Image (cartoon, rainbow, N blue to C red; front, side, top):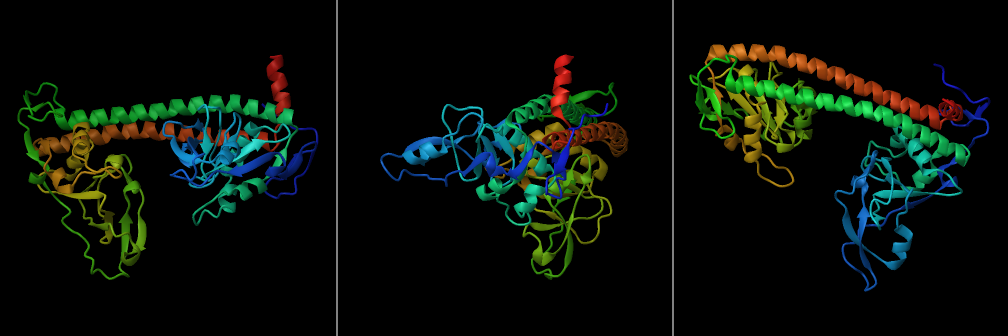
Length: 444
């Protein structure tokens, strides 16, 4: 079905935007909205009249709405109470962090204010902040906001930059029609995306369940079982042994010395560059002198790279034929198998019982992790060598199926997100006449 176009267009005067409908105007954002930056954080009262009030920061601003699960408080003066009070319909725009991320305030709290990591855009002359929300989303998607905020450094979407953003202005009633159309259509797309994300989550859960069962119960459903003596593990095949990891492997055998020449080139693995399904997905080629101080673990063929940081427990990967200069972050333990196959050990570290043990032994508040020596003391089930090989081959086949289905779900999500972005862009730039679509829907 071809989408309806407006009867007449005119040049917007902006190269990346092109033409806009002939009856629309084109101006800076400040023409239709008042923009105010929030207050610098004040932790103590500076006068007896100051009040302690809840406030929003950039972390509270999400594309799908304002997150009030963690709202902090600060002191404000009576004058600031009037200036910074939020009203239903205000658009909140992140000034820092993920610059431009926006949400409509819907009076989620009875009274609330905002800090200087957030800009407030408030309607003037009947202009729709919901339409503005979609316009900000569109220019965020094409990279315009990142460019004007110079994201190569610490990005700031200041109130002045927000106010100066160029934008098309349909008549206010038409803005409302466009926003209502996008609310409806993006809601449908978002529901489909949510379904695909839930499918990916279920596949990940099933994948881990298959791994956990195979490395703790084996492949023979008729095998005689025994109590493992480990609360998290339960029963294991009777002929399997229970040993601490340190009895079957070593840890962090090779550490790059501080005396290494600063111009020595290393292939550095950061913790975010690894996951259980993709293995080592990304590395950074840097000079040792420029590398993070935590880049110390040297890798060899057959090692198993295991995250010790609780928030990245899925960062697990067997290492195959790495270059001599491959070094891992100290957020990893580099496990070197001795009396177990590398392949089986890699799957063992993905088992739910072992992940639960790692969580239970993690310490720290902001960056909870398990100490490498504590990790090596954890007990694990060890099958006979021939079973290790058989189990690993079975899991290669089974996990490949899950990974294929997960990749398909992720591709569907990417396509839906592209469609969503294209629809928003077409609507807010006037490439489709939403008025006609809305009339057709009403007639139907």
